[in-house]
Length: 232
Image (cartoon, rainbow, N blue to C red; front, top):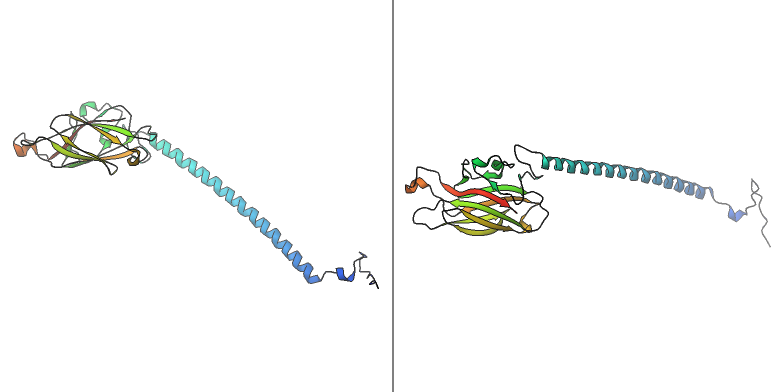
């Protein structure tokens, strides 16, 4: 026998089995409210992330703009890399003698440590270890060639002086120098070049004072004599 239909208030024609308990309706409504709240929170979080990303992009662009300005801003006669190294033009010799101070590069900025005052011809190193710093203008990667014009004091009874040269801690070679002018060619691999910024170090085996041998009244202990540098 078919069950009689119950006429519910409102007259919607539902049977008794189709009546939803009040507790179930409450749970469904609560879940709907929670989902709505989660959607609103998610939208707020996405908006904040977009704002942070925009601020980060602005900050990044401003930092690069400042670095470009600092790299091209002259200080004295030198322009500087973002790492604080004086820029040297490519394939244009830089002379260290005081007679060449009309150059566009402030050579005193290149002489980091271990040097006496510059003279007309160039500059003598102080004791055994000297350091130079420079940045290669327009460096785009790959090998680089550096030519150093050097001289050294060779005491009586010695035929030459031996010097070691390093770039950014990378050993480039050992060289024998007689007393006169010598051109040293250095080949720098990309692995020792940091964005074109180079710290060059020379170390002489033994350093002497000319006065100790009666050659002159110069009592200074002399390292290498640096005349010029040419970066290619």
